[in-house]
Length: 317
Image (cartoon, rainbow, N blue to C red; front, side, top):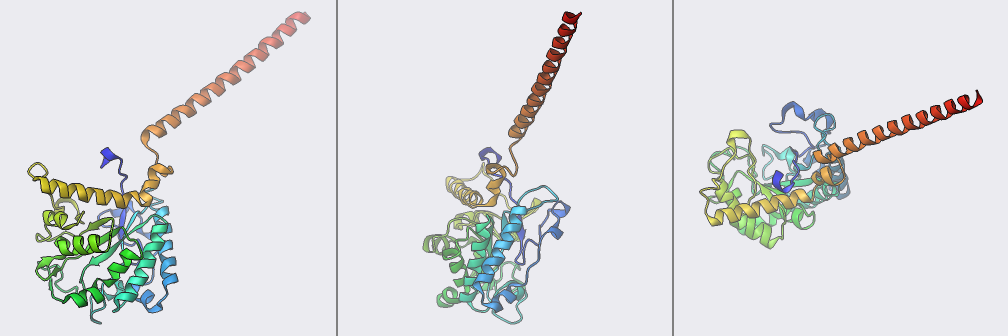
């Protein structure tokens, strides 16, 4: 990415704010960020204006970024989460707004808008039907549904977040839709999300810990990134890849760059949050030259005055 000038980005997990920087360690002081009320509380308010203001506050924190560390902004946020309270015993109900798809979508759209106003892209998650925590990543929990339930309840919040919120990032889910992994479903990520809803941006997987989360399947389905660390990162051998794999990788790269280009990450170079090294070197060199010239000028003026004073003394004698 360095060859094309893509700035680095810092993405934090949510959904109660920038609260988890996975794998970054002490370089990002988490205590410098706020923890907001659970989505369930915001859902109980039915207050879209409040959701928008929360999004703006998170966005402001994104602009401030890692002030005590690397000075980088926080560009991406793995939130809001818009899965459904399918049961009162859901393991992560606190992360989700409601049992109602419409309410969840309207609130999420406002959070997305507020964040986007400040240059933070929201990775709306988990797409889709991630309504159960127990065994959700055990070889891909199989979920069954009919199309009416899927469209009216489970993917309705995502649709609203795309169409009304304008989100430029989505996180796919661990589970399977029928027998197909959600992160590798062409019907979900391309036919519905991109072609039907008009989504522009990147799709990242949930934490790619399992072998069934195949990277080649992902990019062909319309996914773009695998959320992983170190040796767990799924790999595609570009040397042995065929033309269709390379074309899918190029498309995925374009989607990632679109999301980043529309974020506060561009502030690094465009408005000088972090200037390129050559610019800093030139500014330092210019400053040295200015100081040297000023010093030389002062010395020349003082010397000229001394010579003039000496001539006057000689003339007086």
